[in-house]
Amino acid sequence: MTAYGRPATDMVDAEPVRAHVHRLMAAGMGRRTIMAKSQTSSGQMSKLLGHGKHPGTRRMHADTARRLLDVRLELAPSTPVDATGTLRRLRALVAVGWPQSELAWRLGWRDGNFSSLILGRRPHVLQRTADEVRALYDELWDVAPPAESAGRARHRAAAAGWTGPLSWDDETIDDPAARPDVGRRAADVLDLDEVDHLAEAGASLEEIGRRLGRRPESIEQARRRAARRTA
Image (cartoon, rainbow, N blue to C red; front, side, top):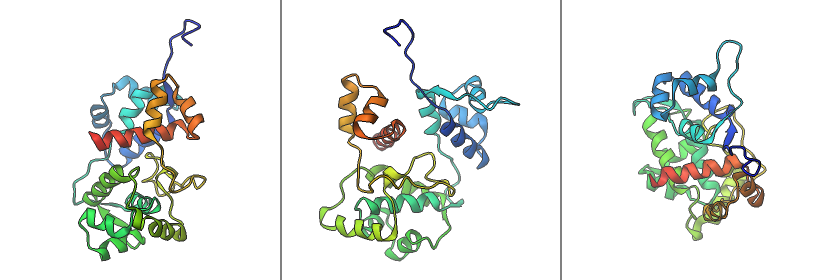
C-alpha cells in the first residue's frame, strides 16, 4: 500500500470484537462503561455495533480492537458466575504439563476443592475464583512446567480429552457454546521472542502467522496475554 502511495492500515475482523462487546452488555456492563474502559468514542462504538438495518462494520483498526477485547466483565467478588472459562483454563494448563497439585498450591486451594472443579462437578464459581484462575492462566500458559511431572500431567489431560491454551481464543474460552480448535497440539507453545524478532525485521502479522503456522488472531491474543502478565 505504501509503495502505491496509499496509507497503510492495520485492520482486523470486527466480528470477534462485536461478539465480545455483546457478551459484556448481556452480562450487565453498560455501553458507556465499556467505552470508558476501552477509551473508545461513541462513534467508534456505533460503527462496531451498528444500528437499525446496519449490522456494523466488517473491519476495524487493530488498536481499537485490542482495547475493546481487553475489557473484562467486572462483578462483585462474591457473585456466582458460570464455571466454563475457569474449568477450561485449568484444564489447558494441565494439558501443557502443569500438575494439578502445583496449580492447587499456587491458588491456595485444597486438592479436594480443586479436583471437584476441574472434573466439572461445579457449574458455578465465585467471580473472585474466576479472576484468580484467569490471572494464573495468563501467568503460566506459555511457561515451561516442572519437567519431572509434566509428562504425567499431559498424559492425564490427553486421556481426558483436555486441550491446551492454543486451542482456545480469549474471546470464546468463556463461552459455553464455543468449541476448541483440536487441530493444534496441546503442548505447542508460541515463541513470542521469535514473533518479536520477525516483527522487528519488518514482517507483517499475516506473514509472521504463515511462517510460524499460526493465525494472526492467535498471535495477537498471545501478545495480549503476555502484556497482561507484565502490566
